[in-house]
Length: 454
Image 1 (cartoon, rainbow, N blue to C red):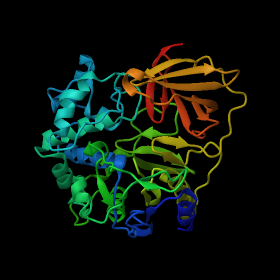
Image 2 (cartoon, rainbow, N blue to C red):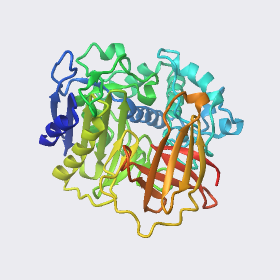
Image 3 (tube, one colour):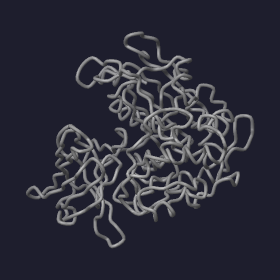
Image 4 (cartoon, rainbow, N blue to C red):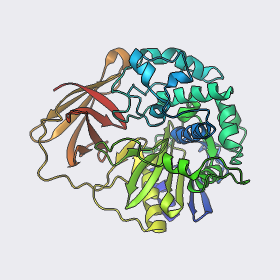
């Protein structure tokens, strides 16, 4: 716990809720305050918006529907949403429920509903998805996809006949007795809750205004307390039964969710069903991070050791603390060992590598040089005298005045590179090969861009 206190001071983090589960026992601690303007102590009962950790709750709900034989993972989405379509009609017919939960639909995923309400997901699926850009065939490569989880949320609504909040309550929250796990900001605010802060990396943190929340419940709109999140982790580490003894999921389904679903593609991160899978310090983990303006969070399971760690912060600079505390927890509780080139935490979706040992010599750069695109961004990768430079340039017609970035990278493994200088130093970059063996995509911050030339 000393590491957390030191990191709070070093990175100017207002508040942290930190807990571990070891051999069925939960241990929790709160540090700091929920708000710098109205300082109340952070406790294990303080509610935080958990952003993308919500995707694991959505996946758990769908796997319950699978076991109830109401959903088939390999069935086309259109079996449940007959009017579903994206820009490509073939994709519209072929994309499956499994693609949604494994981030492998292949379409651009960084879009979200414009509002929040009972009709939000229905409107989103009916409208916004029709103009989406396809970057890869379904199942060809994983690319982090908020839009896919919004579609999954609408599927849950249609199959259950309930709003997404009510459905998650029936399928997950109430059976697990998660008393402070909610999907509405208005309900969250009836409990002690943590306000988001920003600015800690450069000065005194300030409260984020207006309050930031996700418009898609299943992509990132669940809020919960540390106590509830650890109870949820214990369920996933267990045999699939609820606290009252009710069977919710079979052990084989829980194992399936933590089994890699796609071939490994230039990354240490593999995709399960709702979980990101990695080997960290010699330990096989299933984890999900969350990043929302003003909050950075992590839930990480080590199933073989019956261990979990949850770290909830209320500042956009919290990723630095999350990285330090994750490493310390895995070392002190499980004896994890960290060598060079080990991604130890996620800065949001970004694998970070504090100690990097580049390949010597570096591989030929020719297979990677070229121009890659995704909506809003053009990525140009060039050979700058023996090392690659990645330039990301916004397409002004859609993204206004977003900044152009330039990142020098070095390879530390096959198709795996790391940023070597600047504010993104340590960020991993992955190249993904297509069926013919050529590099067809680059994955940056968990999202692919499609190669169009070079």
